[in-house]
Image (tube, rainbow, N blue to C red; front, side, top):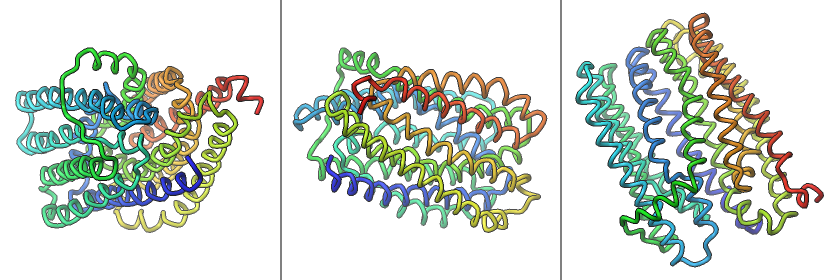
Length: 415
């Protein structure tokens, strides 16, 4: 990866992620305002369950797909690798969607909740069709940006037209889910136009088994990571009110709209770090230091923006509808900084094929959050949920930094 290629990748990633996260930020603000606390709390709770469910599709996960595609030089071998990964995702998505639909139809819930949950099924199917891992592995960040822009052009008008009153919770789920269907279709179109790869769907049990065995740490990382993120939200749903769920979800989602950059920016570096590891060690170290500098700079800039933007965010919502939103804003702003620092170390660890270390991070953080979230939620409500998430993230950063410097091979650490 030359400096020109790196800058190009970063530029397109920033464009795509700015559009994507700006759209998510807009949706969070608009949904929270129109649906009110109870409706937005219901939407957020079901959305969180669905987003955890789709992690089961990650038995052939994104990061593994990026790494394997990045290693291939010929388009023919790229197609072979991509077919096995994509086919496994599609068939697992169909299976998970069927189980999800059956569960929603059989459990005893009211009509609004059932309809909202059913519309979210489109997201599960769309997620299985995602080929962003192929674009990233081939460093086609322009294709991802175009897909994100197309999604936004569909999503924003759909939201403004269909979500007009507090009762439109189900429509919010429908528009949100279908926008990801548009995104998935555009990724497939772009991969043909920009990369020159068409992925046929086929059944190859032997290759599927190989992919699962090779990537199970990626899968476990994702499941544990999502668990530690959503345990406080689920604790709130059980031990508190939908208003508390709505307040926490509102600020948490705004934070994650920005946190996406904490992952997608280093993902630009990931293919090249994977290719350099144990081959060109000096360049590996230099690239990691460059990544760390970018992320720390981003953390500083964000803190400045968060300080000056707080008044506008808080004034947009009333404390009566969303209690404790100011305190939640302060706490979860620090979560974004923590994310930026975390991925400065974890992405190079993934490139070094140290997935087991990240699994341990997620396990320790999940166990810690599981132990502290319930008592914190019982005593402090939404504030307790935010403290538990932030504490878990600090534990991950500590383990990530220590693990990175400990596991650099001696021939690299002497550079």
